Amino acid sequence: MAPLLLLPVLLLFATAADGYPSTCRNATCGQQTIAYPFWLNSSSSSSASSCGYPGLGLACEDGTTLIFLAQSHRYKVSNIDYETHTIALADADAFTTTTGCPLLDFNLTIDTISALQLSHADSNITFFYNCTKNSWSSAVELSGCPQYNKSSYVSPADDYDGEASEFGCEAAVVAPVLEIHKKGIVGVGSPPATKYVEVLRAGFELNYSPNSDQCGRCERSRGWCGYRHNQTHGGIVFSCFCDGGPTADHCGKCPSSSSPALLEIFLASEFGFQSMSSSSFG
Ligand SMILES: *[C@@H]1O[C@H](CO)[C@@H](O)[C@H](O)[C@H]1NC(C)=O
Ligand SMILES: *[C@@H]1O[C@H](CO)[C@@H](O)[C@H](O)[C@H]1NC(C)=O
Ligand SMILES: *[C@@H]1O[C@H](CO)[C@@H](O)[C@H](O)[C@H]1NC(C)=O
Ligand SMILES: *[C@@H]1O[C@H](CO)[C@@H](O)[C@H](O)[C@H]1NC(C)=O
Ligand SMILES: *[C@@H]1O[C@H](CO)[C@@H](O)[C@H](O)[C@H]1NC(C)=O
Ligand SMILES: *[C@@H]1O[C@H](CO)[C@@H](O)[C@H](O)[C@H]1NC(C)=O
Ligand SMILES: *[C@@H]1O[C@H](CO)[C@@H](O)[C@H](O)[C@H]1NC(C)=O
Image (cartoon, rainbow, N blue to C red; front, side, top):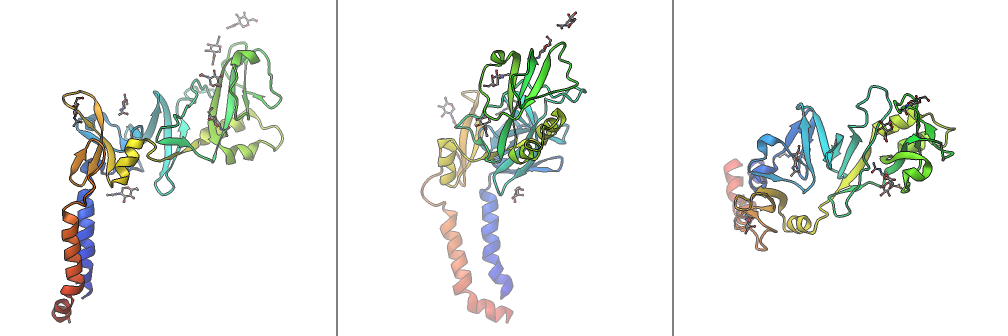
């Protein structure tokens, strides 16, 4: 009897797998699984369609390094936690010099309607480049920076939004870091710049959710957000992948035709065929 009771469950799983659009299949990059709502933005698979949230396409470099591109600035993805909806990242372009002096030239700005948002675990540190003076008591000088005749500093300031020139500097960059790592160094004397660099290297986290109305609406209708190429129009268009195929917005309200049939099989096997199963297996 036990094997037959498993049957409906297996059937349900088979159907769920069929409902999962083939474009939403998991991909891997090195040790990491790229699963919905993230998707692999690879040139080879860009032809037909992709399944995932707008803005959550990731690139796999050399088949090993997972990269998130923010306005063409590269962030290395160290982990995606699908349970807590968290992606862990670190600036991949800040350490291209061999000096150990991070050179940031990009403020990460997170659009409020984007699928990604800064997490509560984040804080900021601020880098000031090519300064004629140190205007902050809390800032420490970055040593070993090839900054010509001027100095550069790093500060624990987390809400800096001024003009670098007001402080006698040529540039300022606000970088997200994990609060817990920052706390670990700030408040225990005056940390050397190298400690800040370690904190920067350790990265930060972003949370993801279907923040656009369109994607939220699609998911609430039990669809999967994604993209399709529109032949007539040329570009890629938002699509909602449903049991019955992709739609432009959301899945139909009526349950798909296969579901009542499955329920019948399930009920029949649970109740109607029970005596038969007992007799055939008993
Ligand atoms: C895809 O990956 C996610 C996250 O690791 C996992 O939960 C899910 O079971 C995987 N799906 C398939 C079809 O392998
Ligand atoms: C995919 O990545 C390329 C660069 O690697 C970028 O130009 C393109 O905009 C990305 N596509 C999407 C839909 O994010
Ligand atoms: C860090 O900086 C970002 C962008 O400048 C800002 O939106 C955010 O509120 C800052 N975080 C903290 C903890 O101040
Ligand atoms: C600092 O000054 C040097 C020399 O003038 C220049 O090459 C470099 O781009 C400047 N860096 C920043 C971040 O402004
Ligand atoms: C650095 O200072 C030296 C001497 O003070 C000067 O000759 C040189 O031009 C300066 N370099 C830059 C890039 O400002
Ligand atoms: C980064 O943001 C700060 C604060 O808003 C601003 O002063 C600075 O000019 C920005 N830097 C760059 C490179 O955009
Ligand atoms: C493709 O684009 C055309 C013109 O913008 C539009 O009328 C049509 O509905 C689109 N097709 C799909 C499948 O989104």
